[in-house]
Image 1: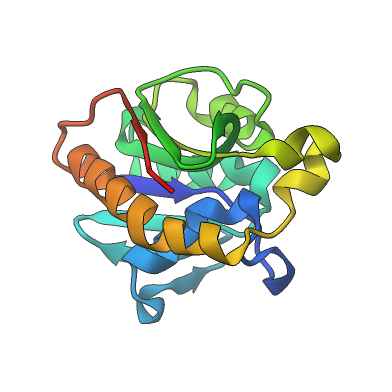
Image 2 (image 1 turned 180 degrees about the vertical axis):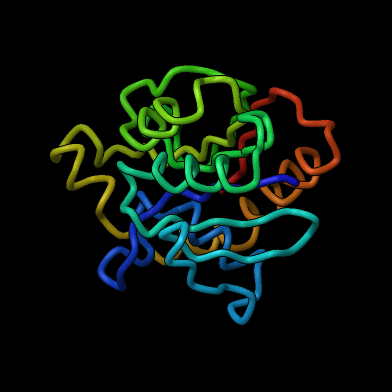
Length: 182
């Protein structure tokens, strides 16, 4: 069994924010009717493409709680998890895959690492823009994408991420960096 953890925050006020880029991508890859609420895992769950897609409802910085519950229930290894998350260190449109690593200041990844260890694959989605240095980082990540950025995410970035998810499911996941032309 493979599990794709999509980091983000529940609630309409967080829809289309930079911190929810993984949820935006998921909504382009998984039909809305597939998502089911799981109180056991504190998440929305969708079974598709030979994997369980998970939108934790614990809020971004506590996603490790959901991952730990799923890991324990299904008796999985950390390598059976793929995390997809935003990254302020990468320019918008850059997609980078890694097979392990530290949180690098990302509290959601720190939460996952505290429950899974740091040896699980991840897809990092760059959200950095010129605005980042002009406002508080928390305001930046909780700020909404503009319409052009949403189009790029929905059309180009989602296709790239789908390819990497398929690689993960098929045990051919590799580390790489790809820049989406905006």
